[in-house]
Length: 220
Image 1 (cartoon, helix red, strand yellow):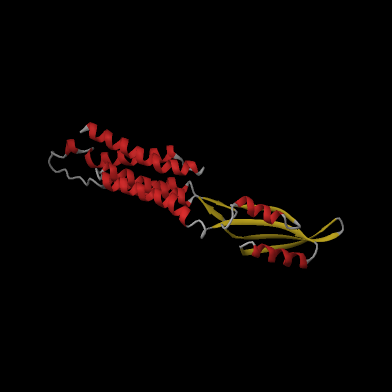
Image 2: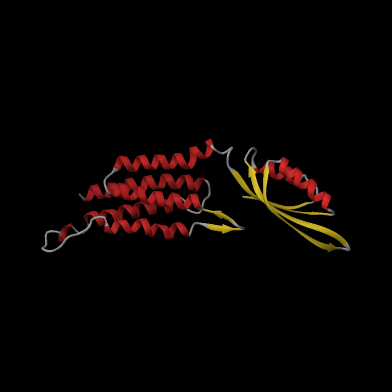
């Protein structure tokens, strides 16, 4: 029985590491070590929950729920996932990685319960969702983008807004501030929007930087 438990831990760690390697490849917050530990830990807790109290079951007036300890993984992993979600400049990052860790904990619980086929199938589906679907639907997804520029008059602002929209950038909001610089009235504009992934980020940055008056650009 001990050998069977160890094999479950090893298989769970392998499956968790496979998911983590995909995140590691994309330089995300949680890599293969985190996913490995989450998978192994979840499997260990499932083993304890299911088999850890077998030595006292023969005693009178003792009844145990074999799912009670394992159930705490579902809620407990939420704290780990919450630490991976970052709100930066009104944009939320890390949701996919947090969901991946949550799914990895489910895989670990499944392997710990002895449901090998289900656990391996779930790992394959997670990898498909993280990698293959990302490639398939990349043309439909968008980048968050922040552009700052200055203009000498309002006509320059409208001209640049038109150019930005022609670059397949959907403007969600913009702010305009007026200030005097060396005796000259200047307009400082900050634009937030979404850029369609028809080209890569480098091409998009070059295209926007070629526009006059652009001071700053950030693409996420």
